[in-house]
Image 1 (cartoon, helix red, strand yellow):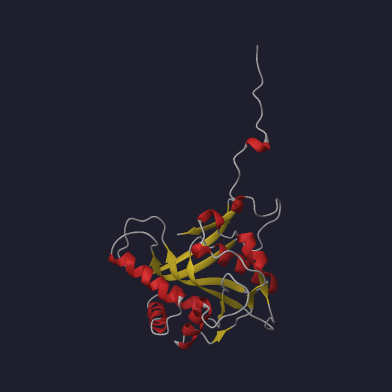
Image 2: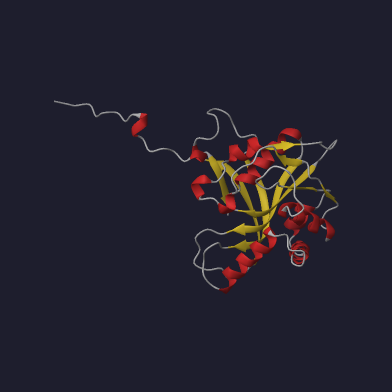
Length: 237
């Protein structure tokens, strides 16, 4: 006698991670991929002197350290002199748009904003435009567990564009650290709505490495892409 196997009820299934069910079915993310570059690497947990130095670097950047920030901007400038792809990222009358922090409102110590200003002071670009803002606060990724970090959709819905410029042809989003790339992908999607014909790319000073056993050097220019894949942001590399 053949017996039908009982079907799983939805209540029996393991819950999906919020990032995997976040976007409405049948609706495409407005900006499905984003090219990015970075100049430093950071390891949150790996042992060793270089990894410890990477954590100090990240802490100084988060604190907008006035002694170190111009030095980091100088490293980016010198890297652009021997990396045509990096030079092109900042060239062509690019407008730097710093990515807001997790909270609403603006602060003088806003890391991405201070980094963008340092990059302008070093001569990489001429214009910084703080037109992207947070309309609602999201959980701070740096101090949250992986399962509690904001999804792409949460970032997207928290962003708004204020006082848009008449025309922007090339936008370079600037952030301090890129991990999975959810924040940058959401910010690019929001800006693309306002400037549908603009070339939107991203730069983060530091690229977070996952569970690596060691890091050999801090300065490491990287060109990659963040894609919308499998219901979440996926950074390559």
